[in-house]
Length: 81
Image (cartoon, rainbow, N blue to C red; front, side, top):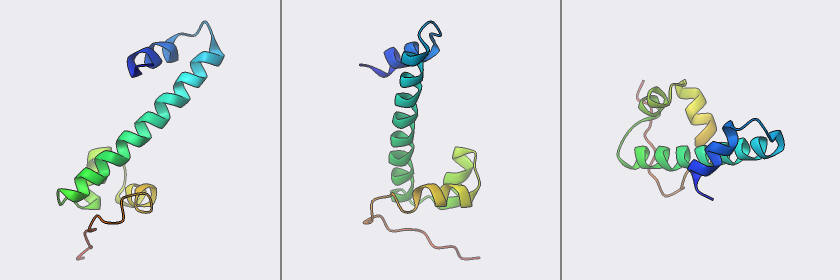
């Protein structure tokens, strides 16, 4: 099923069970996409603060959520201060 169809199901309140399953699917999709974008950002040279700013969270929150999940071959930026 396409993400647009899942989104439509998530907004339809006539079947809460289907709606909740759709919301869970969208959450998983969003989490997967976020991780892929964080990895792309790190590969492009962005640091954790820049990633956090783009996500609208703190640096610590971005690092805690993603640092152990990213591809281990990605060179990580180190804080200088």
